[in-house]
Length: 608
Image 1 (spheres, rainbow, N blue to C red):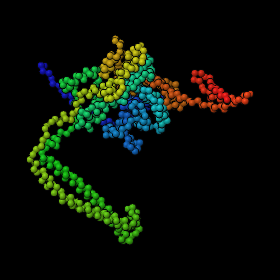
Image 2: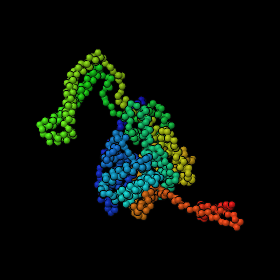
Image 3: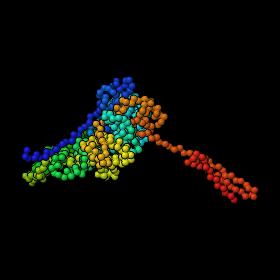
Image 4: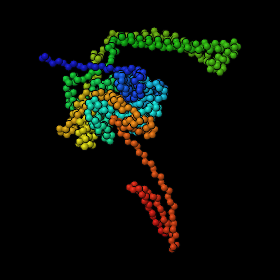
């Protein structure tokens, strides 16, 4: 063709998908025989996934529950009134009520965590009273604080009486699962770049074990990108603030954003009008096709106002009639009680006074007078409103009559285009904060700078082994172009002609659950099994105890130095010399020399 086609506008609409409540599953026989099957829970800060580590049937090989890790409960509401995860169809109306068990990526709110566990166990079909007979495989944050693990173990062992618990890191479970699929020779060495909802991690793995000393965290991830996108679009479209919600921004990030291989070069492309028209995504908001109020005649405006006025008058008249009817019924009842008193039926009269919560006949007379006055005033208002209705109509017609033949019109414009959000450079600016946190005012290194810092702590041989298996996982790593961007950054970072390999998880958001399930199938719970904490271990070694395995944190017990009790000071000894002079010998308390096990005593001789 001789002529170039004009760029076609890409118009999209928000899905605004609403979740439906999760079903209550029945407990399959395969989950009980021959032994209780472990429950695998990926306790993520954005989404929780739960299911069974059962080899069969096929429907148990995937997580049965997937829901947002939030709970909504009004202040003072009962525990049973709390809504969890998918029980909340739309998060936006309840955004101010939402609570999470996480502070960044660490569980701190264990009341909400207990509600999450209740939701999981009841929906999986566990109806045993007061206990869960199944082992639990649970994910936790890298380098999880001992106090948080202690509280989690206490919740599981004391509240639910589980027999075994195993803790692991979600990024390492995903690494374990994908390595088993590729089947390289164990032990695995590599470096995991994991980015979730609240923060991102760099996890070096040496010979199949996490090198916790060199793990690093970057406090930038999906939630910061969504907030940044919301702020950008609200500044760009101040007339559509209510339509730019956080849920819609998360949808834009998941479905319309991408990572640029070269950020500055890509931003230069967006300067071209042709490139902009071709690549900009127009998000269509809902709107009414009716003309705005300025595009109608004065007669139509007058008629609308008159209709509104009549509607208000009808509402007020209806309310007055209802109030008058209630007062009249109350007055009739009080008058009937008064007649009892006048007829001399004192017993019935006094019983009626007690029912009315009154003390005497004088109080009854006072109430009757007040109600008679209120009924009379209500009738007068009704008569006055009926007479004023016709006057109001004539008054409005007199005011708007001079303008009845004029037409007030606004310049015509495209209503559909006015209700569109043009998402252009925002598509790449928001994912870029993972590499440049300074875009949102964060004073910290980006992901690749932190990776370079971590690699510099190893020998050249270890660096070669680590970069030969760079593994990307986590829901915030699913942007198109993320793998290419990491490869480009590594190419600029590594020495000339050095080799590296970047691999993306097959399912970045779900592989942590599948890896935990695969680990549970290969390592059956038992007293001597690697990675499992029994109730006996919990009682003997404390709640912070961790049984290490290939996808877990390292257990570094907290050493509390016990203070050495001080010895009481010996009384001073006084010796009498032959010349009559006395010598005072003061013995200073012995102190323990840290370099030796002996005791040294300082003796001071004072003579007089």
